[in-house]
Image 1: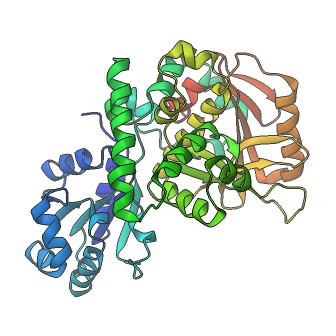
Image 2 (image 1 turned 180 degrees about the horizontal axis):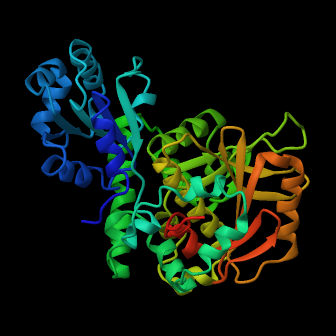
Length: 425
């Protein structure tokens, strides 16, 4: 088993909170992680609502099921019986002992309409993402990467540290983008097996998982929406354009897009507003949550096809967005991800916000950087002033070098394998 970087945070939460909830897309590894915890560091019984008998009990008598299993207990796939959360809350209110319940869900159960009450103050929330680049390379959790960026008073110290790291080839990175982070396809070397896995995932997701959450009146249009959303990954979301191509009215489109978000298939990254300004674009950017699935939906099944595809740049940006979100999920300090762009054209892919400070991340696939990239970052620096601590351009080369004051270029492999957190300044 590849160790998940979220594991230590889960164990910490189990010592502080009576309830811990892990959410994330189906087949992302939640059950494997929870069963491993129950067998090793956190001794507990394990129940799954994929078991028909347990599901029937959870639906008909949730209070009885929880009373019979007061904890410590792990309950998998709780979104299949949302009223179970009420029964858990009732038990926890009677005895708020840490580490009683570890729950998992393949949908964001706290956003479902019929779950109106929350476990505020009693629950720790964590999202398990697909495998990160560092996890697949069996590197230690790069939990200090983002903290090091915000603490970098002198970029030259970071450059000196990073310049010692050896980088992997761009072909290796393309392979990661093509495979994605879902455990089964990420670890499979056979193209035919990966393709069959993605086909089965898509079919099960549409025909079972979605229908368990909400009635879908137009399944063919929903299936087409998935394809269209994958084709628009890395682009500003235009509902009018997307609705026209999907053949869906606006209200239905918004509902279906919320379902894709709720089940962790897509992420919408909002634009950053330094000030309220008409100059700044307001629509979010759409990112598919796994580049392996996006590549499959776009008909790319090998690295050569990916390297020639016109969507390569958008897929690289999507991969960076998801790797950054995985780092944010491990951060001990609250951080948020934004994009930045002006309606006149200039943009920088990502801004990470911590308090009143920001770090900029720009993603370029090429081995060489053009002046327009540097100009866009400099325009951002002028607008944000001292709030912008550091700007990093990620690119497909193999050298770390300065592009200007507080602006450095770093290879993807060096950044996402945790090299930035491995030394000292």
